Image 1 (cartoon, rainbow, N blue to C red):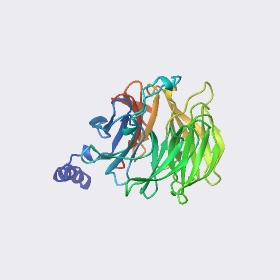
Image 2: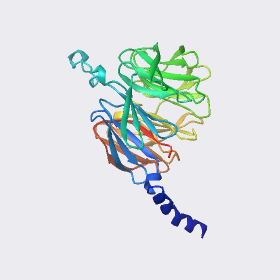
Image 3: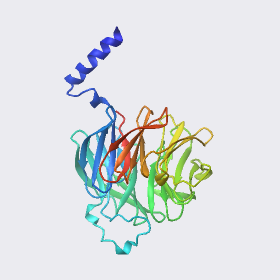
Length: 341
């Protein structure tokens, strides 16, 4: 009887608050690199409920802890597919770069923060007062004070920095550098490079375990996921599937840290890694065309992958490891971030 009363009252309460039951569901935000916008997906209905224009070439995206702001990396550099001579491309529009600030309630771009040249990805500090952005073409990482909207430091790293992640305790920021097959380690208190360590070839993205002192690094050309000991800042294992080489790209850990989910680009699959013994325990096949970015809902039950060439997002049920739906998005979906509520 109590449960029935709860079901009856929930829609009424939502209407009184000016919302629907669906509005109470977490949202998934997907950056669309070629169309210059962000698709907002309601996880209750698994459909796009709004599209936010943000500017040129949005890629990395993160949602602030309170859920009120989404940050997105914007770049005026022309898209350069593998093998293209960049000297033949048009000049970069430096004025278009920066970190876009999306007001979640209104669904609009509120402002753009200076971030150094050509930001590709970024992470937030533990207290969310600082943002760490990889400047791909300058081989630097910019540290941005979000309170006064200023770059307070720029650190030299290896060529082609890409993935950026902050450790759960906030002490370290890891940055992948594709050009040297390394991860650079930033001491957040000192605002300095503490060390660096080797990984598999062409490291892309990073995910820290929420409880154990480990980090997982996808290595596209190395066909592996490097496992790093965060206490020593060094690689301790390479995880790779048997059979033909794959190309690990994006990564996300389950909220409890028991699993890591890895997109494999042209291999069109998602690998499932058990983090207890760091072994592959499953694979989601036929995910989509070149899945890259990946996100997970706060309850850990559903994955979303950005499939660039097919302009859509795949929905994956974690329990069955099956694709349950494909959602049309903008042009060339790249990054994925899920809100907490």
